[in-house]
Structures are given as C-alpha cells and as structure tokens.
Image (tube, rainbow, N blue to C red; front, side):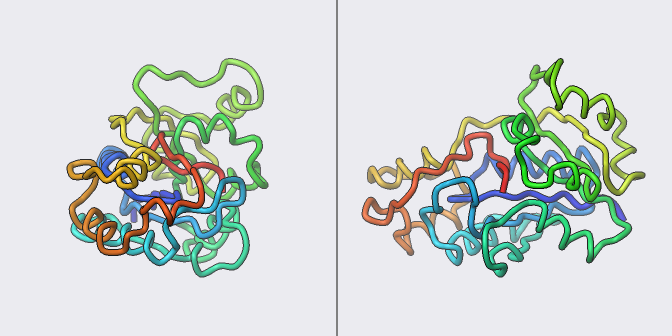
Length: 228
C-alpha cells in the first residue's frame, strides 16, 4: 500500500485551495489516500467560527466524490487541544508499517521547531511541505540542520520509509483563504466558484458565518495545516 497523506486544518470553511493541494499531492506523490482530519480544538489559535459538526459536514461534502479523499474525525472525538503529535501517534498505532506523510504549508514548516514534541513527530511520520514555486528552505538554524539530516528529493523515499523524511513539493497556490471567505459571506456576497457547491449550500443552510456567529478570526491562507 502507498503512503497515507495526513491533511489537517480547521477547514473553516474548506475551499478549493485545500482541495487542489490535496489533489495534486495525491497524484504527484502517489499517495494511497489523503486523509482530511478537521481540527477539534486548536491549541494556539482562536476558536473556529463554525462548530465542529458543521465543519466536519462541510469537509465530507467537499470530498465525497473524489476517489482517494477520506475524512477522519478523530480529533473532534478527542477531548482537549488537538495536537498533531497525538493525532499522528494514534494513526501510527493503527498503521505500524505504513508510510504516514504529514502535509503542512510553508508557514507551518517554518514554525516546526515550536511544535509540541516535534522531534518525536519526525520519528512517527514523514513530512511533506507543500509550497509556492520558487520558495527555498532556510539556510541556517534548526530547520536547515533538519533538512541536512532528513531532507530528500527522492519521491521513492516516501514509499520506502515510514517516517523521518522531509520532502518539499511545489503545488498550485490558489489565492483563497477561509478568513476571506467568511468575510464574503458575512458581507452578504456569494462565495460561488471559490468552494464546492455542496459546501456553499451547507453554509447557506446553517447560517454558520452570519455576523452574529463570528467568534474568532482564524486564518489558513496557506490552505494547509498549522501547528495543532
């Protein structure tokens, strides 16, 4: 079996930026699947605007027709802050011999040394950094040292090694953010063509982004998971 891509985020709401990134990685890196894992309780960010059940429903609606896309609600079923290390440990216990590939954006990668038990995380999974074309890794500091020890340009390493490798891959970056989409909806405009119609319908039905519902200003402009 091929690697499992782990794609976390608040998905508040999910949009085409998330979906295009996941689709390109699924195909280019030959993943067996991309597992979307909506964040339950972000430990270092404001509370999501839409509640957990609504965000989960939106992710399911957005991904249900794409082969290789699956949704995992384990973070929403777990009490307490949703740390990535806990999620990856849980997946590793289920798939002891599979390659697990944690998908993160460039901003998240730059902050990796501040993550909870980040060195242990590298022992449990590979890391795939999805970035804008032309972006380069830091030349100095702990990330530079990490790339010397763990970086690879060989795609086959993600299939051969179950953990411990960092692979950087350029993806199409769509200039869409969840923060901007919430503002569009709150302002009374239509987010059509920025997200799947099924997600747009759920937002309209639930009214989850009406002005009176807004309680936080989270942002996932890079369309990928931040530290959890």
